[in-house]
Image (cartoon, rainbow, N blue to C red):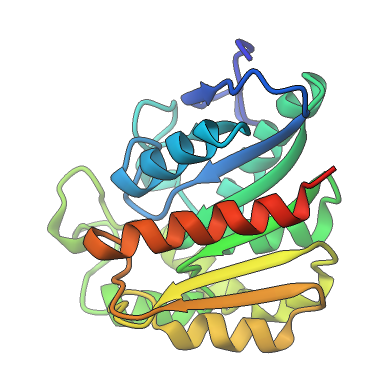
Length: 244
């Protein structure tokens, strides 16, 4: 796939397409978390492993992140939902059927997108953020929007726009019942950024078919010994859902 992908603001979204040269037209789209990009280790490892299993993958950076167009200060979950829909539009125009996997804040994006866009055929949440206001207060409550940064990273200024969106959403859990597609949730029980209780909470609200996997000792980014189990879980589940 070589088409340029632009969002509704006309910003170009940077992406990498892993062409498995398979006869299937299923495609895994992977979105990252806050302050991340398409080249984070988990995103790349998952994409390469899934491609090796014969399924094409598209990993992309949300606007304002990585090499995508836009300003990081404009990044919100709501805007990223529209970014994801722009990706799905181009994927479908190329004849692909989309499964979306989102990590962390990208997981919250997936819930909101899948809740009202039936072009997303399957949903995967990797350490997915659920309680957005609680996350903001926990991680950035002591930082002044417009003056400070996220986790001290100069390239990631904390904006009032981001705070307001996190507060307005509050929790994506209230949209869980609107997700009508198969849903896999994976979370490490040693995650100190998004507590595993977030996934447990939204899993209880989700429709069938659904599955939750907790990986003992895995951190938020599934680094080290957590990487292989999360990749194996995703590949196994995709094999079941996309068979035939």
